[in-house]
Image 1 (cartoon, one colour):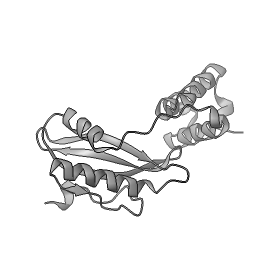
Image 2: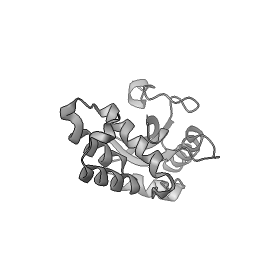
Image 3: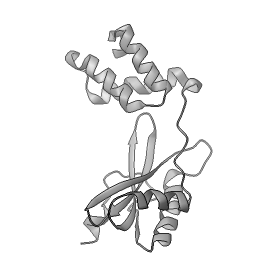
Length: 167
């Protein structure tokens, strides 16, 4: 028996609606909140949602990919408070999207970072690391700041961050 069978019909409909709208985190939250009293962990909730993505297949209304052209990325960078001091690419992943790369603007003041784009693997397309590397370098060149990507060829969500290696 799977965790899915323990969900009430109302929660199943909610989860499927979230999956159909390509909102995996909201779907995972619904599953986890409903089944946490039975011992379900976040990882198992993620697996339930991944299975629903597979069941619903082509009916899922996937979001359009983030634009990766320099003008779009530069506009996103300019929308963050503070001066961009570096453009950084970071690996992340989950069971729904596999490995993907987030492009972020590292900010001087206020200290922190702002999300610029997420690069997912596309069927038949180049690896997301290569795409993110090209887009990040182009934006960094445009802004006149460094670009940092610790592991462009191999997914590594524990690779050193720019602030750690620049000290």
